[in-house]
Length: 424
Length: 68
Ligand code: HEM
Ligand code: SF4
Image 1 (cartoon, chains in turn yellow, brown):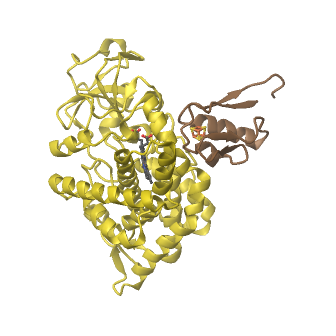
Image 2: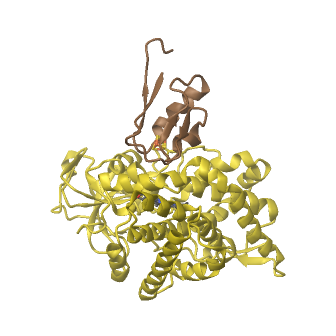
Image 3: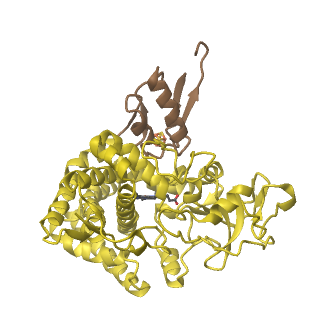
């Protein structure tokens, strides 16, 4: 391992530094873009080899602590002294676009950005909607949605498609429509907005307008469900609040919007990358084609391997915190790099290898601690159904472009593919 | 061994239920419910795994006298 003198590390007493005064960082700006889906940035390893934590410069120009070890990462994510509140001054946003940062900061606080008792209360009000049992009840409908989209793919004369448009984006979008209770007649309208909202190429101003339009739509939908109750997530939340005399339209809109954003692009990107990962490992793919029992552990491994939401798990210290030799000062930003944690060789043997039978579920692809993904059971199920169905129904599926030509979202908040040309 | 669940901190992620539905279940509000406090054999092994996986620290293992 090469000397990386430019990284401030804290593994040994001699290099231990504290607080904002410790200026020296690696030349690299963090997060470092992934070269391709099958490589993790070398800088992550450089940090980890010295210490699981180092001070780095972010692409925004600010400094933050970067945590690259699995154990420390989980500990910090479970530690209440670190806040998720995006309105805090030094919150380590990673988007370089000021407009996007402002949008993130100005969003009405959803559970993602809450702490402590307020977070617990908000999450608990919604938790029952995501139980393992309730999610299992959605399975037949999700299977149907996936089958319909594969029918459409198969009916095309060209025997080729952009998988992102044909499957990865529409499936989770429709699943969220069903979950929230967006009426069937509005699905096209809804998808027409969420598509560009999540598309990387949409300019921030346009995204802001779409967000407003969606919020208006969700508000109207909530009003309709208030007068005309429906048995779906939004309907039940409204009824519950109404009965308790706590009906709060603004918070319901913000919750619906959070579910929409948190559950759409993430799942879509995992579908695309999972397909790439599987196609690049044909021997392992054959295994899951022959035995659907192998799909759940395969999904875990793909989640770990790609850990697409690398930097979503970011926090601000609310008081001075001692982590080993390192003192984190109150107000310091901390990024708990999920990708680095999930490629920590002390926890995952040969971490840069995809091993669909690894069976490791202690990855942090869904985070850890009180904010761990509320939609994880749903996401797992969607991914299992998609991979099983896609390769069973289109066994000859292949990439229609060399890996190098596939546009991966190298600078995106959530890693994924912009387009995925496939053929069969 | 005995499994203990602190329902005050559970965040309903369902990791435990996915790990072993013969030991763990969820109430309708998402909060963990123990089907048994004393899993045995394979189930005991998986219950320990669930304790490791639980994101909220709600689950713990208590070793009891006579455990082998
Ligand atoms: C493969 C797909 C997904 C990935 C990789 C993913 C990843 C994550 C991560 C890393 C967090 C933790 C953020 C933090 O600690 O600050 C999170 C939280 C969250 N996710 Fe997911 N997610 C996925 C799918 C979904 C789906 C399908 C939904 C809902 C329908 C969803 C809804 C949420 C919500 C509401 C939170 C905030 C929870 C809280 O703050 O307590 N996610 N997700
Ligand atoms: S894994 Fe932990 S937090 Fe999740 S439901 Fe079980 S006890 Fe609750």
